[in-house]
Image 1: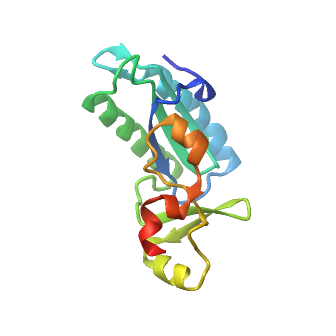
Image 2: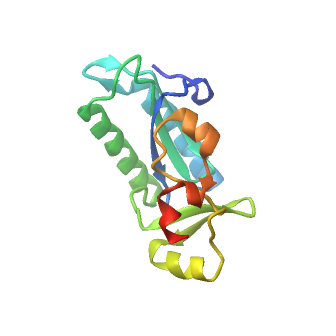
Image 3: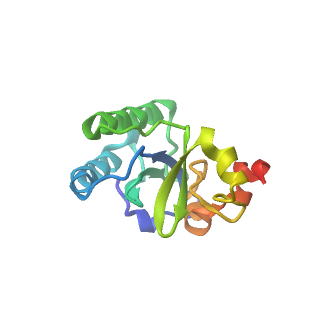
Length: 160
């Protein structure tokens, strides 16, 4: 069962997939109905999930489920990964490249390669206050209140 993203409870579980590039307006128009259809049809052991799916900042596919209504099973999580892989093929992007980190800079999402991180920190281009899109955020409440979050409040804190 689909629920609008902004009506999710704070404890709703999230899966965040970061695109390797911003999606164009045409691509967004193409995938937005696919996201809603997936969330509407997403189920666990034949039982519909209270789910939602949205594209944020033109770059992040976010899938969500109200776990108190019905928990996502291994099979349903596998189905979501299969769905995101199909989006990758359709759009010719990667949603599974964990070597790219996303930061908010001057109102835009900026990607930084993990291999560039130390030099960007040393040069002062990234600091503990830089806003980081932590894809490890796992519930709707945290997404609403702490995303993006200062890098010091994420796993990146070890670099400062």
